[in-house]
Image 1 (cartoon, rainbow, N blue to C red):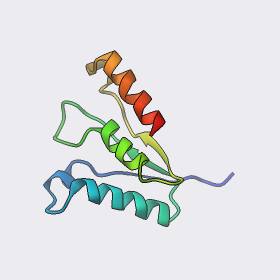
Image 2: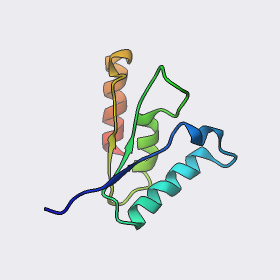
Image 3: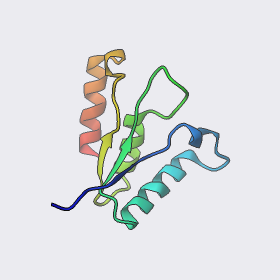
Image 4: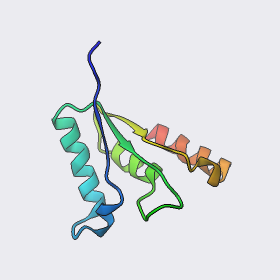
Length: 96
């Protein structure tokens, strides 16, 4: 079996970038596909340092990807989210 590799998108420091955070993330996804990575991951935290929301980021990446798989590196914040809204967000991501 061939090993699979992925990258975790940086979503904290990118907020302080002088360029467009959304464009930087899409560009990173394109590079991941170009260099043969199998997956793109987004971590999650509601209470820690400021960062972009993982579900929103994955939705944006889903619209711009062709073959990489998407996932959350950690989603320990799900107990802090409203269950109906979380289900709605995940369902929307699944259609993206």
